[in-house]
Image (cartoon, rainbow, N blue to C red):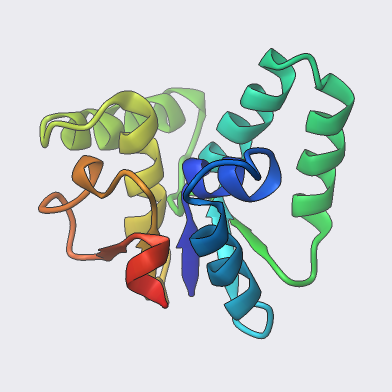
Length: 146
């Protein structure tokens, strides 16, 4: 499964004049018949970008469309918790352990989600430096993917 980062979503959906747009479009077009995904944290972050830009309705539409899409999967971190304290303890511990690798909270939550899901082939981002050397998952740019 190919997982797309927030920056790839933003360039694909919003920033069509960005110099990275064509490579991003080529990537998304090449994945039409493959299993692709976004983490719930990437989706929330992207919807936050839309809402911040004054596109709150678009954010809701995008959020709902990704959750119900047949051509994309929204990944959640996989773990079990017995109760609320166990949930927060696990979330905090897992994210903290990844921040100790030099990741910010959002990237730590994304990496936690990637590392707890099976069948992740690669994570595609324009910000490879955020993740390279911090995981065994293959980190690629849209240019690298093609």
